[in-house]
Image (tube, rainbow, N blue to C red; front, side, top):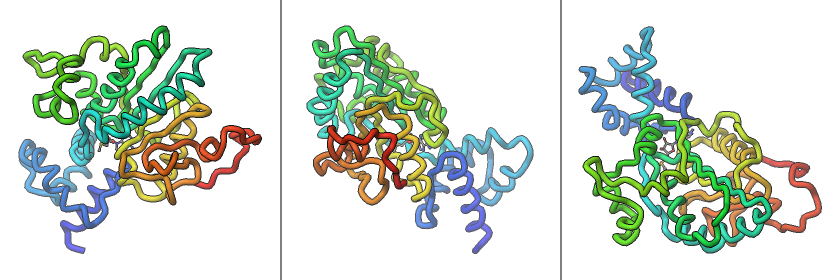
Length: 290
Ligand SMILES: C[S@@+](CC[C@H](N)C(=O)[O-])C[C@H]1O[C@@H](n2cnc3c(N)ncnc32)[C@H](O)[C@@H]1O
């Protein structure tokens, strides 16, 4: 391997160690493009010099910047609109019925990037005011990227970002244009919360979430890391909860913990719950495979 090849591998290893994201050899060409801003700002000539700097004491800030720059934060409002329609028509009515006695709903978007997914969830719920009147609703967005979480909290979207996925009606109903960009209605902002969190870390509140979205995050985990991620999602989920992956993602062949619902690839339930609600065996007694 050339010196640059070794340096690229070291950078890829750093990303994997901090986030679980894998940059296979075929995708390592991305490193130069993604880090060009850091090279320019810091006067770094290329990946070999970068790796030299990363081995020096006090380089943690540089390492953080490198990891942030390598993460893929691509997102937009109502990404895969059909899945959000399923959410509104199927998942939320189910949860509204199941949780009616406590009137509490807990939603977690794991890998929420700059917040569009979380504000989409808030819009879906806010557009069903009758159903949710008097409910205690928590929508938490987390991401391993501090930069993404800061942007989600600021919630100032450019004209380009606001038009991606949102129709004009929804844009004008739920956002207002300010000198800083398009900002969500205070009602939406009051419904959501953001935190920096690695989804591979031990779960803070086991069995808490009724609905978990983990969309377009697991794609670049290797098998072992993906299995750990599914374990974390399983641990965090309340009984009878729902899991929503990206439209092109599936649990089939990837984990024994969840099953797709009705062949809908991205929408899943725990295996035992997908098989049948009347299963006699307590959920925690079922042996899981990965
Ligand atoms: C491609 S974006 C997807 C955003 C959104 N879920 C969507 O589908 O539009 C993937 C996000 O996952 C985050 N991510 C990657 N690895 C993560 C990890 N281990 N824990 C939490 N977030 C992670 C990235 O920082 C990025 O913001």
